[in-house]
Length: 75
Image 1 (cartoon, rainbow, N blue to C red):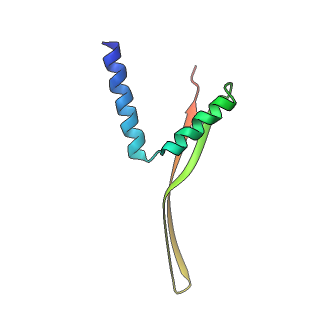
Image 2 (cartoon, rainbow, N blue to C red):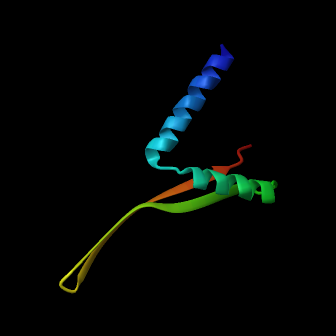
Image 3 (cartoon, helix red, strand yellow):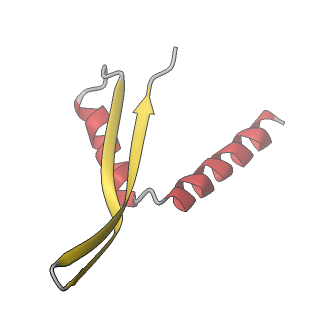
């Protein structure tokens, strides 16, 4: 029973991270930070996953979608 619940939660977690826009590169950065400093309380990374820039007649419109991934130790 517990193994099934764990598998369901991990699948849900993976789907939610994908929907938010967390990239594989972000996951690797977090892993590297924890490997370098295992006693660290938290690690984080911010990445721009989408960017739009439009220039016309001296004006610029820019839209950026950023994703921030934070992993913290809980006690």
